[in-house]
Length: 320
Length: 320
Image (cartoon, rainbow over the protein chains, first blue to last red):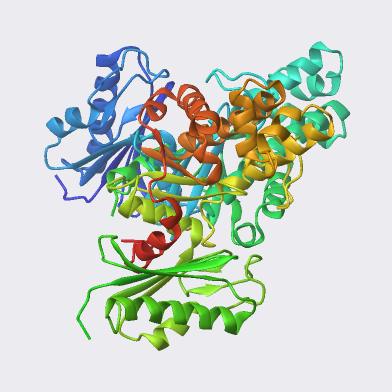
């Protein structure tokens, strides 16, 4: 068995598990992706098997460390999942203890997925060397992770960074979280799709419907219809931009990050949904923190979860 | 000259300078309060004289440290005021360098006033031993300071904690900061007084006017009229409570503080303006961080600025 210095990162999601073996500087040497199975024991077995597979592929018996990024809520200090709605059957799953038993000589750390992504971008991606940053993912939902003064902001409950569920418009629609007018219900990919479907239902969405082709009436279809000047699409875009702008602005006021790193599917249409919101936020926040904040695209793409887990494995989530 | 171990804290405000000499555990041994004079040289001279006065009173030639809490914006690392609107003529004032020259053997630190207050409450008041806290002052304006993972959240621009200028209702009135519907313009003491004056002007404010007596139609008068069941006062209170609740809730979602410490004049009517907002926030935030956050009154009263400056002098604002 070769003596290879690798860190394993496990991106545990509701639909897939992506496990990588990487060098400590973030070069991925092996990856294994499987669909997330149903049930507690099956999830643990699948995680274990993917770890063994990537270690086998690189010829390492024991990794330096294993990091897991998993859906919240969790207790990251104890490394226990609590009752993650996206992983039914996994309540109170003691992931850290399980992997510590399997690999007693490796450092084991568990963190929530959005925080892991923030740490991944900080160590390997768009936030390298930055001590004050926010990572925001705008996808079906809106999540985030915050690093302030060089430390991950876990907060007392380990839930720090839930920027998507801050209220930006209290008379807005109700979110599944119970709040009215939180950022997620106003301008996530789901919110954009909902607005597009409503436009179609009202008979105003022909251009969006056509742009979608045989696919869903979603943020991408709205982007394309807006590019062609469709008024209904432009209205939907304007609403999403408005609330993204307020969301970014509020982060600048509260945290004065040097960088806001934006990822997630909606951010792929950067010039449509993000760039004008970023400009608005920088102009409306206080001049000094607005001027000192760069709002930039995430850098790690689909590997952000796994590389974030590698950063977690390296201990980046712990106060230092 | 006796060898007394003292720390000097200077609370530099737009209307007064309060300087104290305190033991490192926060017992105030001497205090000197003067009105803030006009102009750069006069401000520096007044600060210098108050320091000499409190040191003379306790019989110390040189303090262990001097801390200053001053209005922003500033560069806290360099210890330079930038262009504080509340201190005309003090642009680019290098306070740290000035006091370093006067007391070369003392540690000198400068921090913005709201951050200093947060550190004061953390070291000496309602936040003792707490690593994740928000301090919010609800007074004529709304300001704040944040400690996350044991570190002050200064952010890249040193302006972290400007919670009062986060947007909570984008169709709300315009604030002097340029934003529409920020927390400060919705439920500060000034906002409550403005709403009360509008009620009086509309002929609905007789009870508030009467409660004010010969004083101003302000948050205290509204509190008293509300206590007597006046409908106009109750409507004004309900609006303030609504936005305080959203403000607290957003802080819980983003930061998961173990404690939100609320000070400022409006918070003196705790049961009216704060308690129902705190209950709403804890109920509407995610269950775990909501349940783990206590929302409590500030503890240091009118000394919060000076004792905050003492904490700053002791180096609490620096990352460690």
